[in-house]
Length: 142
Image 1 (tube, rainbow, N blue to C red):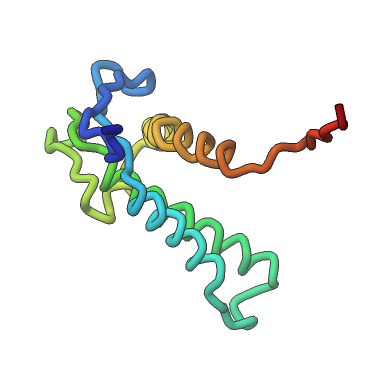
Image 2 (spheres, rainbow, N blue to C red):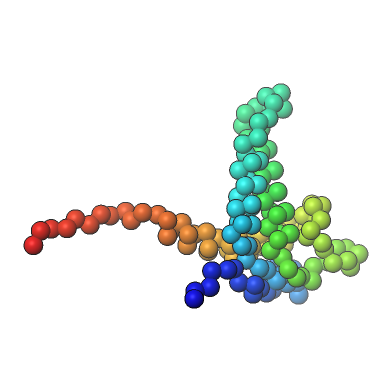
């Protein structure tokens, strides 16, 4: 029988932006991929009072919040092991919401890209699978 569950295998990545640093990542199962998408959808659909700024400023704030919450979710669920420490030598805790606020942006962007690449391959494959063919075949009578 064909296996239909997400692999429990993890992948280790040495970080270019943090010499000797590494992260070990796991792929999100389908339910967590949906939850990650829901975070972005919910954040962008929330209504905001007009008194907070122009419509463009409000929209930009919504997108920034959605990105932050989505990345907090991804880091919390995808990073299974790492050796990244704070300035006091304590291991960073990616389950703590405040950790991303202290993380070096270069390192954060690199980890974000690794997580996206690990999970986007699956999403792109699914999109290709569900996209109808762009050309049609016409049968000619024999």
